[in-house]
Image (cartoon, rainbow, N blue to C red; front, side):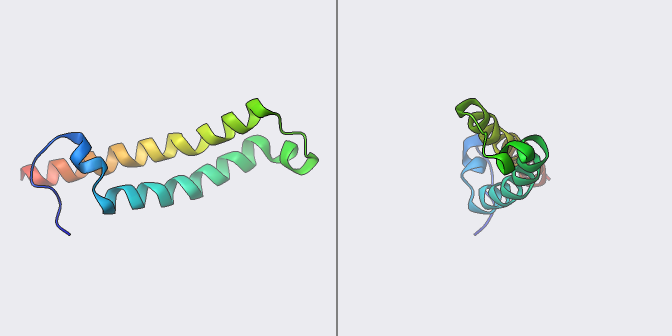
Length: 80
């Protein structure tokens, strides 16, 4: 699969190599962040609904950052 030659951000966001890499990064980094931020509550079994929402956001942030970086790099490379 080749990189989209030109186009909007969304074309790159749905480009398989970018979103699969972003998901992998989000799983690894998000898991580390959840353990660091909520490890005690996970072990105690005292996670509240708001904690689960915050834990989900811990994975969404690295996904967004990785996607942004991947799209930016792919667009810059396509312009050369």
